[in-house]
Length: 472
Ligand code: HEC
Image 1 (cartoon, rainbow, N blue to C red):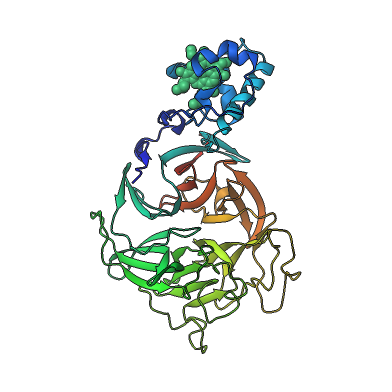
Image 2 (cartoon, rainbow, N blue to C red; image 1 turned 90 degrees about the vertical axis):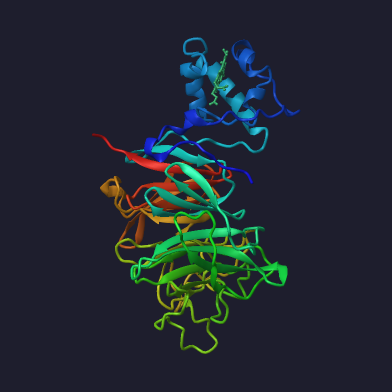
């Protein structure tokens, strides 16, 4: 098993950029342009004649053009990098910068490193990489402010506690790690009635008799804070039928303001089969009691043939869900087709229209339907054009965040690799802003009890801690 590298303990957060472990230097690829003269004259002695030092690099000071520029101009004494301010012209620096960028990207798995601070329109935010070396961190949930649970889609569960990352064994043995499938969301819940502690997982599950078939599943087990192995998993729900596709599983799980448990399930890439029938589970938001039983006030419990856990329907692939911190309502977002990603407030018994109405088109540009509205079908609170590939969501609540940030949504973008901030007023998006542009595919966002925000980035395999830097 590949052990992620824990960089630092959260109680003493240090800027991440100085803490990257030295990376393995890649080999030189055959097709490359010649280095600029200034590089050969001033840099090659230490960094290699053909810039090989920058191929496949784990960047310490930042790989974006400004950081490279700063490294060249100001140097970094502590690391042994001289300052070239006044030695090189702006033009020479730019040509070197371009060359290093090209060398850095030549290996294919160029990994952008996070900036140390990020400048939003009205706030400076500190960015600290607290964990790296993961593969595809998919879900996160805090048990308390010093303990974070993290899933990796590859089928691993981690506990990050007071700066120490340890893996948790005993996961279900039928996790279908294929395509978009694998271990997905995680939730810790403590029962207000008896104080018992539970851990819930969602994952794509193999069919018991046929590994080619899979379905979104929800399980839970008692949580023992001291154990490194979880036993006694209880299967609460399988979003049947099992299908042979490996996509659109959803799935997020959360406990709503009403004390009920909500689970999002994608339509498995079968838009003409699942979303518009109440007789199958995919393409729906489901509602359960926390023990997996069906609440008597679910909308379709008395509808013949309907799956009784259905809460809302007509969904495509919802991979973000929050419980509104004030109203307790269930907010979801979902991947649409090209141009049809949506935010919805999932309300009792409502149909969100996929694929009868959509603002999106097929990926190749052809029309799915010209209808964007229809009687009996709900309009989204927001839709993204173009699609951002939304994944993970939080609503900022409390903490040190200034007033203008309270109640803002943060949504990850898989497609454009950034974190989106949406300001909301009266259930309407009033402004959008790109944060952490180019950071990598943002999979999930978590918030602890203190209102601090954490962002999981796949590919880079990092967990970032965002901290508002307030003027005294
Ligand atoms: C005396 C040796 C030396 C020379 C000459 C030198 N560097 Fe460096 N440079 C270093 C060292 C040492 C580091 C520290 C990081 C490392 O390589 O492990 C560094 C770091 C850097 C970094 C930051 C890399 C990161 O991981 O963020 C950049 C960019 C860089 N050098 C560019 C240049 C350029 C461009 C030149 C020529 C103008 C140059 N260096 C000349 C030794 C040198």
